Amino acid sequence: MDELMLDGNAIAGLLQEVFAVEMTTAIGTCGGCGAAGPVGAAHVYRGAGIVLRCPHCNNVLAKIVKNDSQVWIDFQGIRTLELAV
Amino acid sequence: MAGTALRGRLTWQLAELVKAVAETPRVKTIVFDVPGWPGHRAGQHVDVRLTAEDGYQAERSYSIASARAGTRVSLTVQRLEDGEVSPYLTDELRPGDKIELRGPIGGYFVWEPSEGGPLMLVAGGSGIVPLMAMIRTRAAAGDDTETRLLYSSRSQDDIIYRDELERLSGNGLTIVHALTDSQPPGWTSYARRVDAEMLAEVSPSPAERPRFYACGPTPFVEAVAESLVRLGHDTRAIKTERFGPTGR
Image 1: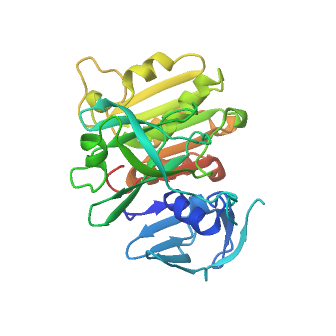
Image 2 (image 1 turned 90 degrees about the vertical axis):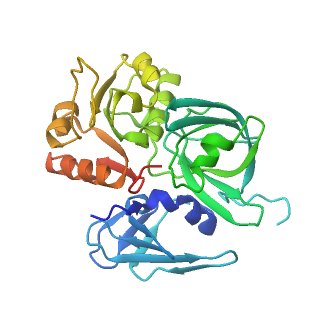
């Protein structure tokens, strides 16, 4: 277990900044194992960028890198994202 | 777009410190007035941003400790010795000073009285903060949802909100303390880290379908979540918020 691991709650502000809606209650389906769960429960690692991993199979769901003027998002590991509108 | 507020768009706003209250030797509650605050739900947090004279910015998230109450927002902050933000918030900030914050943020680790229970709250150290917002929200609403709090601290002096928790207990709220490092003479409650056996003793049974909220340092939350699953509780009913290695 990695003591530095956080969860989706920790990046709720960043996600809301990007998507303009609350995202931790959005349900993401992992492209690796197919498990579906709230973004708030995803495992989050912060370094030079942010990595979201599936809490079930550890597959990389998304990578997010932000600087002062841009956000770069790689959603390769998320099959679907379902949110209330 | 001028003058149009985008739905859910977060904006930084100025918050003025109203007062600061020492909770423990390392923890303070700082109460802000935030003009235009839209209200919040228990378990939500704010992002705080500090800007140095040279333009360097540091951003941290802090759980809201207070129940919804007008434009007042209380944060409870643990001072981290090597922290960039917490020593400023706990030691330097004076009433009347302003900081930038944005929120309320989050919707996953949130509880409202209408969601019901039984509610099982598990806190490690400063992980009590968002759970205290739930307890305060429950009390303010006159709600009697069966609620149990298992709260792990190092010592009696490290228990945040100790007196208030004592006052609020009863009325369906049961509080059980665990002291991991040192116990006062005559201590009769748990004197070890939270483990599966303790969780089994304190929590409602899986058949009662309790809703779990566990918050604290990452190793603490991991141990609690693993134990609860092993005890047969539904993983979907276990919500967690991890603070990382040190607790913030």
